[in-house]
Image (cartoon, rainbow, N blue to C red):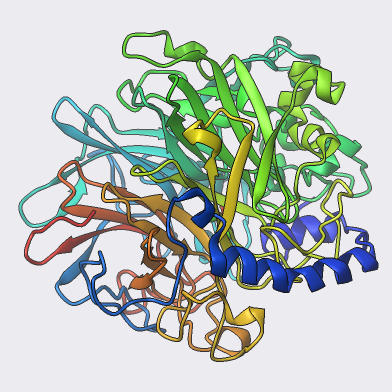
Length: 627
Ligand code: FEO
Ligand code: CA
Ligand code: CA
C-alpha cells in the first residue's frame, strides 16, 4: 500500500519498523561521563598531534587563512547568497530540456511521463564532471521527488493516475548532460550525443560476487544478472579510469504490498522494506515493486552503479562487490601500492562506515572491469582512544558466503561488531594528505535506540552526543599512509552545534561560533587546493535549537587550522548537495535540492512559479579560480 505522510526516509523506516529501546542505561551513563574526557582529549589535545600530522582545530583565526572570500551571514531569504565578488547563476533545473524535442516545463501540469522522460530529472544530488573530446559531461544523480511538488497540480498532492506515477518514476535516476559556457553563462548542450537519461526502467547488469545468486533471481530474470533501473541515487563517486558511480540510498521506500499485513523477511526488514511504500505508488504500475509478488526485487537494489558517461549506449553495472546498504557516496582512492580503495557510508541511524579494497592494482591500461569485482569489504570499528580498525567481512569471519556478504552487508557488519554511527553521509579524501573525512549528519536515536538490526548505539567515540541533533565530521589517517592497512587514527574535525543556545557540548567544538554555525553536515568534497567543502541537509527552522542558523548552506573548512567559514546559503526549504568543478576550476557547480519541500519557496524562478531543484554555477566576478 501507499502511505500518505510527511516523514523523512529515516522516520518512515522507523514508523514501519519501530526500534526497540535497546541501549543499556549503565553503558550510556558511563559513556556520557567519559565523553568529557574524550572531547577534552581528542579534540583539544589532538589525536593527530602525537603523529606529527595535522594540527587540530582551534578557534578560527581572523588573518593568515587560505580562504579567498569573506564569510556570508546566515540567511532565510528565498534565494542564493554568495560572498561579495562572487555570483551564482542557474545551469539547469528539474524538467529542463535536453533535446530539441523536449517539451518545455508546464507550470500548470508539471509535465507528464512522456515529457519527463526527455528532460532533466528531479532532486539533483551527487554529480561529477568528465572532460571528454573537449566536451564537459556533467553526470548527475536525480535522487527522488517530492510528492507535493511533482504532483502539486493535484489538489491533494498525490498521484491521480498511472501517468502521474510514471512521471514520478522517470524523474528519478541519473542524467548525463553535456554543458557548455556560451560566453554569457553555463547551460545544457541541447541534442548533445552524450545526453542521456538513466531511469528506473533502464536495463542494467548485476555483476560481481552476488550476480546469479538465488536471492537476486526473479520470475522476469531467472539468471539473477539483469535488472532494470536505479533510483534514490544520493552521492556519487568517480573512478580513476573516468567512470561515474551512482550510489543507491533509500531504495526500500519504493516497495509495497497490496496487502498491508504482508510480512517481509527479517533480512528485508533490516533494510526497511515493508508493505508500505513512501507514497510513490510504483507497485501500482509495475508488479516488481510489489514485495509480496516479487520478494527478491529489493535485493537487486542498494548497490553502487558504475556508468560510463562517455558511451551513451553502455549498460550500467551494479557492482555487488561494493556491498548492499543505503549507500551515500563512494570515494575512490588509489592506494600507494596501486590497489583501489573505496570509502562508503551507510546513511541510516546506527549503521556503519565501510571500505572496499580491490585485489588487483590500478595502472593505466589494466582491466579496470575487474577492480570493482574482486576485493574485500570492511566495516569500521572505532575505539574511544582515537584508534580504529577495519574489520574484514569475509566468509571465514562472518560465516556467510561471499555472495551473502554482498547482499546482506549490514548483517555481516553487525556480526563483526562494527561501530554503529550517527548516519554516515559523504566521505572525501584530502588530496594533499593521507586523511579521510566523513560527515555524520545527526542521530536522534544515539544512546536511545538500537539500529534496525538490534545493535546498541552507545554514546562515545566518534558519536559523542546523546540524541545528536547537530552532527559532526570524523576524520582518520590510515596507519603509515596505507589506505589498505587494518588500523587508523581518528579524531573529530568539528562537532556542529549552536553556541548561542547551548553552553554544553551542544554548543559544538571550538571551531564553531555564532558566525559559522550550522547543523547536519552531509555533502563533503575537497577541492584541488585541499580546502574541505561542507554542505548541509538539516533543520532550517531558524528557531529554538537552530536559532540563527538560517537556511541550509555550504561552508569551507581548513583541514589544518580547523577554521570553518560560511560560503553560500541556499533558498527556503532546500538542501545544498552535490559539488564539482569545471575543468579550468573557474566554475564551481553546486546542487540545490527540493526548494519549497514544505510549500514555502518559488526558487529559482520567483513570482508564483513552481519551485524546482537546480544546479547553479558559482564564479568569481573577476574570473578567478574557485577551487
Ligand atoms: Fe540522500 Fe544521505 O542523503
Ligand atoms: Ca545526502
Ligand atoms: Ca542528509
